Image 1 (spheres, rainbow, N blue to C red):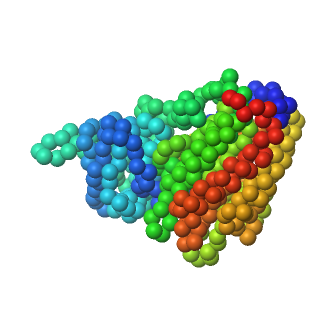
Image 2: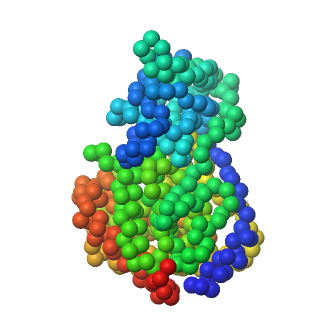
Image 3: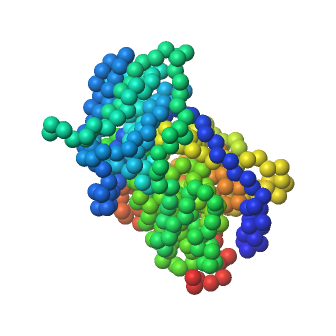
Length: 430
């Protein structure tokens, strides 16, 4: 492992990364409401308390009630047609279920954190439109401050998308806390937060977050909440041994781009990356059940794996812009060799994990699968994605929200991690 890590360090400088912006479809079925309670400090942020949409398919007005004024940046996107509102972090205390249906030009909308310090609202439009006005009214005549967005329909040929970097609103960069309370930037130069700590780093990646709820159970449970609770418990369990340092891609209800998640793993020279999710299937596609472990491959192992990878790879688009950072192609045989070695380690850990989990958790009939998940694409970090179960299956959901099941399953995953990395750890002393 030491040789492999040294090899990784030599390769790190050979890889050039570039940002890629692409406008991708958004589904109105995703998050319109935060399920994770915000800490008390969130009350220092502006509070949104009510929302109204008025008008028709020619002109539509959106009104958001706030307790104080905020700065807002608005822009429009095509394919599909959307309006995006960026603002400093806001606590959304809106009625449950609001946003699933709109009116006039707004088909539906969603909202939430897009990074610590920054919130975003995304309107899905019924057709091409332009922003006629965006303004904030100060409190007056017994009315609270209000954010107002006025939209007008336009012909397809006259539609002009806005550049999201025009008149850029200054928001805090996205950060995640490491195991000891430090921070690793998810943007900018990749650096290790604990350079002096020689313990192997395990990156735990609770899927979704912030503006992206992930899947939701018919009874209302949100995937982003379930997987964060599981990842937090797993972090605490792994840290007890003292052998490893654990880094979370998110430890609260914050949106982190797929590229940012991969970057966190590489910035910390991770020995292992574990992404945690909970799947769902539409009723028409049956009632699958059990946990599944995925590794990266160019060709999906089956149609179900391919469909899941396609859905998970659209997670960035929930925020209104695809922020994924893809590595530029590098014509270097060493990179290819490292990728092959990494996939071998990933497959080995996946088998170890399946053998441990089957003793305590119900597994899918085909528990080991592979597909082209973007979040698993760090070329030098062994990576797996765990689907803990299906929130669309009643029996699975009952387990997913059970503390007893979570405790047993967390213990099995921690045991698999130790079996995979333990022999490579010389000392348990930090």
